Length: 208
Image (tube, rainbow, N blue to C red):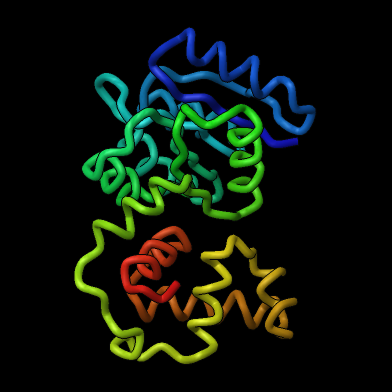
């Protein structure tokens, strides 16, 4: 069962999301918040698997809530669900450490599948957000400039394909512990915090 906390300042939208998510037997709504601060406080208390977070909310926005959650509750996934796909909003969300960014215009099945994917450790970005990240990239760097080994590039590509450590280990014929340690060293090498930042790095630098 995937425990989900909803964070949106519009009550009728929360009610609509609850109705949509109730259709899936694998998802359970454990709480509702109306801003980022409430989302963080409720996440501490309820320990959800996924917070489905709106970006623009009064007083404390989704970026604030996400930063607090990722700092204090690193095992809780945050999936941004919003109507905004402008560069400023996307970059602010990415900087806060979200595990995925999707739009409310997506159909119900896509939203449900995105929650399941994020819960399973897969970063999810809808097509136009992916393009926005890539289009806003600085001048493309040659991967050689980062002194990446072929194995590290393999890790990056598979992470961007949505593979978890077990799947990467299977595809590369490695032990899962070897993959976990290799990715940790890669993040440290590139001075990145998590797999989401690694995926953005890969897109911006034309590695994938």
